[in-house]
Amino acid sequence: MAETKKSLMEELYNSTLKSFAEGQIVQGTVVGKTPNEVIVDIGFKSEGFVPLEEFRNPAGVAVGQVLDVLIETIEDEEGKLVLSHGKAEKMKGWQKIVDVINEGDIVDGRIVRIVKGGYIADISGVEAFLPMSLSAFKGVPNDEIMSREYKFMVAKMNKQRRNLILSRREVVQKERESSRETLWGQLTKGQRRLGAVKGITDFGAFIDLGGVDGLLHITDMSWSRIGHPSEIVKLGDRIEVVILDFDRENSKVSLGLKQITSNPWEAVYDKYPTGTIVKGRVVNIMPYGVFVEIDKGIEGLLHSSEIAWQKKMVNPQEMFTVNQTVEVQVINVDKDSKRISLSMKQLEENPWLKADEKFPIGSHVKGTVRGFADYGAFVELEHGLEGMIHVSDMSWTKKINHPQDVLQKGQQVEVTVLAVDGKARKITLGLKQLQPNPWAEIAKKFPIDTVCDSVVIMNSNFGVFVKLEDDVEALVYSSEIDKDAATKLKAGDALRVKVIKLDVEQMKIGVSARI
Image (tube, rainbow, N blue to C red):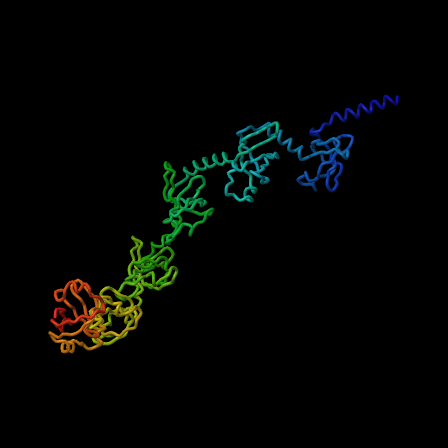
């Protein structure tokens, strides 16, 4: 009787063992918790253990709760029944997915972590791999990638290995195509839309309107002058733009940014009538003048001729710097051409109106040499007033070939006022007139037929210039010297000559080497 009872117990025990197998999903009841594990009774000879870390909310696991668990090991090295709740959930989720989706289907999911070569996505509790090359996440920050749900296409599915590979690229492409079609149907001229800056070139920026790209040309970015589009927009910026024009057939959209604000030129006549004095910022410097921004989007040209009253043209690039603040006067406004002419000299009294009173003919004045021309030197008498010394008025007796031989830039000189023309803004100055004309005395000292020694100064095509004494020069005519002898002469050589011509009015002496 005892043996029969024992046999029945062993049979019952063995049948119990056979009803449980590793890899099997069964239901169990939570009977206890330790700091690291949840104890579950599945009706086996001993309770099983599930790692506490497998539960999303460990604190919410309560005694008496019924769970699905996977039997991982019936008896490990310690004789424990090892269970897994997480794997049971995944297997159930995988089976559910296998029953409802196929390759090519679209599924919803969320990126849960980043791995080498791509991302792991959670699709209804099942982990799937999204390769980087199929993610379409280029340029998207990781925190943004993991912050929302996406749609994916099932690129490949291996049911036996429970392997699922996703693709987002095709989904994005279809979404863009759909958005593009919708957007083309919504576009109208003058419409305002939000877009993202996706590219910047020297001539403008490309704006993604949500499936359709538009060009925001540099001339439509600001009413003000800008050197490069990057001064206004940056990659990734989201900006509001105006649809200026579009051509669906050629997929072209022209956008405007400045058109969102009112055109500052509309009220330019009221705001800047002729004679208005304003302060502005130098925005560009050219050889012919300076562009000054007098208001947001409004620039005027300060021409070089309107910088100072002096007749000689000034060089703006030597006088101004970009971003410099200047005070100017509006002298002309053309709204249609968007042009404003400015002046600095009009802010000062025209010094030429009283130039003849201030610089009477014959007066001796002082000035500064400011520049040269082939025919003379320019002397600044005071701010805005400049006179010129012609080479013929630099010396009574010497032939001046270059004014720089007599004067230097920046040199302080005393001169005689020879003529003043305020209307023509012209003052004629003389340097030699500071001394009395010596030619009456020269004529007495070197009468016709006088023979004297001279020093060669230079050779020329029409004769040899010689010096008779300090400050007295004469010309040996080509016909009055042997050609071969003339070619051998050099500066500093001695030459005996005879005076053959004397013209006091023309201040010239002609001599001959044929004695």
